Image (cartoon, rainbow, N blue to C red; front, side):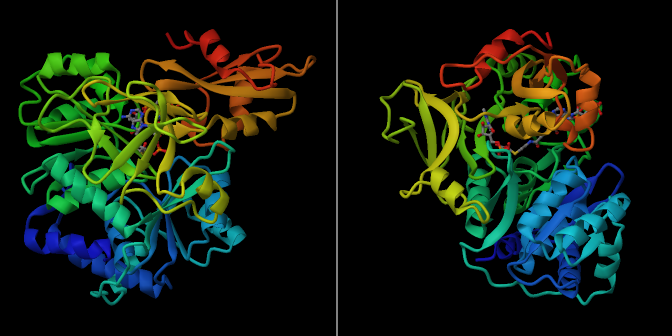
Length: 503
Ligand code: MLC
Ligand code: AMP
């Protein structure tokens, strides 16, 4: 069934209730959202989007961007959101790989977007601004509203989300209507979402966390969301008395606990704080609880799988753990080579199976086979162990990945760009403890003997090539990189060497 059809039932029930509001006084009731979505669906059809077509979207956060996502579902399109931090170089790859029928960009980026679209053969480019403006909105205004909902099978694609790969090439995770619908329904129940809830939404809406966890759960429950352009502690404190739930990456919580305004009184109206996308330290969990009486609910997910494990709503939320499998989700902790389960309490590879697990990487059958096993389990690349009470601990990663402020950065991708710079022999990119972002992207560069390379030059070279969050916070120089007997760079050694870089 088309996921939009499931949402429509909620929209009908909720009629005049708020769906999305903003601090600037913008307001979409559920009934407004339905009609705006029909107009946007009419525009998509007029622009040539047919069922199964990809719609690539790189726009700033706005209520209309969510309506566009819904309109895309409605016409049977495949929504492809892109981080606003991606550079033209990065976008070129996504468009050439996904071959969208339409690219929706920011009004200020139109010239660049047209150029990239021309190079990659994308037939249509429209704009969407943050004030219900842009050419897409103009087209929607004129278009005949499209009231029908395109029939879809459970396994038809609803979205493709790109996630960087260890080889440096991003992979498009193919998510179906069933994947998104089942997870939203499960989370609504598990976290007790109701029509009374008001989510303070401060995450970006181009990744799983802000888009699917935040918005799909809201839609499933018929709740409302306050849409904030970004995380800003001052605004969060102003809004908590009017909100009930906050979803954030650990950086949200480390910033909040440093703020003296965090008290039982300022959080009294809130019923739930959820954390995910990166590890929340036990210290932050405990400090938050001591200051507010609220135990943050930590959960674990991935682009490929939506949400898998969650601490309980009722019962102990154990600091430093990601809880237990959500209903319908299975996990096992295995030996990396054999995929046999390891004895309880031992560390192994975390594998996940369930209706939430994606169906593969877009046009990458081999990559898909490596990570999605024949028996349906997905190999996450995360190392885990289960404790005596059945709570799962994520203890490390078997993949070369840095998570900075909840954004994934694959070192390989950054290293490849650094290595192109003249005077560089080779480089290694690592994550080391960072007080704000959890891990700080850090580069270690080996220059040619007579090259005069500076940190500034290396960063300057990356400036227009990689999104800001992927750029190293520091660049160090070394005569050589430590290697094991197989010739592999020993990143553990480097992480130890630079562990105090941000302290
Ligand atoms: C911003 N900067 C970052 C950064 N965010 N650098 C590294 N890592 C980040 N995450 C840059 C800015 O460009 C700026 O550079 C400088 O760092 C300081 O910025 P800031 O003003 O302090 O950042 P802010 O806007 O407050 O953003 C920080 C943040 C944000 C943590 C609030 O990054 C954020 O909202 N992250 C959420 C990511 C997310 O949604 N992840 C979910 C993925 S889905 P300069 O030089 O210009 O000053 C997923 C699955 C799952 O993982 O399980 O959920
Ligand atoms: P992404 O590919 O952006 O979806 O990021 C998924 C990765 O984020 C997972 O594979 C984990 O490494 C990490 N992650 C998500 N939630 C948690 C969590 N609660 N604790 C530790 N790591 C997490």
